[in-house]
Image (cartoon, rainbow, N blue to C red):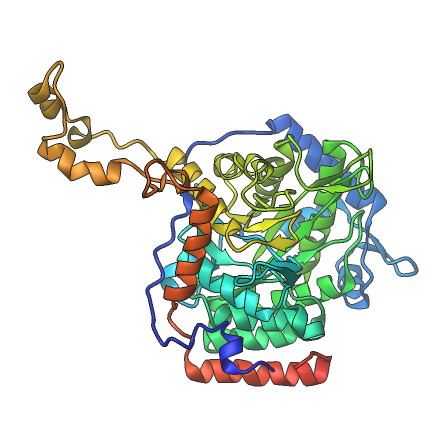
Length: 500
C-alpha cells in the first residue's frame, strides 16, 4: 500500500481546499443526423440477424447458465450463444433510457438527459511524460491522482476516467485507480475493473463512498466500462465483472472496438453491426440477470492501415464516431461516444489539433449523453499533462459555438447604436464598459505576451497545468472513508496479488 501523501498525489500536503468550478457540459438542441431512419433500421436488423444466426461467444459458465435459463440457444461446447429476436427485444425493454451517475458532491451529479453531453478524460494510457522531469516513463498511481485533481478543476470534465493506469500496482491496479481518483475529485468516477472478485472489492469501495449498499443503488458514485473482444466475443473477466456491478445497481457500459479489416469487415457498416452485436449481447445478459440495471452503449471503431498494419484511431471519416450514438438511441439506450485521443505522438502538433478539432462540435450535434476522452496522445497511450488543457480549449470553442445566441433588448443595444451614430465609436459608452470584459472569450491562442502579440499556446497550457497542481485542492474525502478504502485495498493487495 502507498502511504497517505503518495496516495493523494501530494494533494493533502498543502492542506488547502479550493472549490471545484461548476460543470460546463455541452448543451445543444441542434441535431445533425448521420444516419437516416432506413439506415438505422437496416443496421438494427443486421445486428439482430447476427445475434440470432451467428451468435456471440461467452467464455463464462455463469453467463451461459443465465442465458440458457432465459431461452437463448447456448452451445456449451463452444460457448457460442444465439439470441432469438423476441428475447433481445424483451430484455432491452427493461433497460432504462435515463438515469443518474452520481458524484461524491451531489452538485456534480450527471443527470443523463436529452441535449446535454458530459465529457470525460481519455482512459488507460500506459505512459506519462513526467509532470516535472518531462521524461517519458510508465504511468503509475500518482499520475492518476494528479490527473484527477486537474480534471476536478476543469469545468469541461463532467466525470473522471483513469487517464493512465496504475502500473505500479499489478493485479489490483484498477482498484488503486479508484482510490487515487476519489481522493482527488468530487466528480463521478468511471472505472475499468475486470474480474468478478476485483469487481466485488470495487463495489465495497463504492459502498463506502456512498454510505451503504442501499445508498449506492440510489446514488451510484461509480460506473464501470467493459470491453468486448472483436469479433463477436465477450471477455470472461469483463462480463463477470459486469454482472457483479449490475447486481449492485452500478451503471455498466458495454464497449466494442472493432478494427476495420482485421477484427471487423473492412466496411463501416459491417464494422458497426459487428460491434453492435457485441454490445447488445452483453446488455441483454445484464438485463436478463438484473432487469432495469443501468447500462450504456458504446462503439469505437478503428482501422488497420493496409500499407503497414498499424492501428489507426483517426481517419477523415466522422461517421465512425457519431453513427454509433444514433444506433444506441435507436435501441433506447444512453450512448458513450468517442472524441479526442489523437494518433499524434506528441501534444501541441498540427496533427494533434486537426484530428480532434471537430470532435466536440460534431459530438454535441450527435447528442450523446456521455463522451470520452480528453488528454491522451499516441493513440490513447501517452499522457502529456498539457494535452488535457489543449483539448479543454477545443472543447470550449465547440461549447460556445453550440450555445444559443442571446438576443434581447440589452444585447441588441439599439439605443447605444443610435447614440453613437454613423462614424462614431463605442469605447466611451457605459454599455461597452458593462459588456466588454465578457464579450471576448479568450482561448489559449490569445494570451498576450509581454513583448506584444500572443504567447505560444502549448507554453500557456503547461503553465496552467502547473498552476492547477500548485493551487487546486478539491474537498477531501472524509478521513474515516479514506481509511476504510485503505483497508479494502490492503486486503485486495494481499488476496489478489497486488504490489505494495
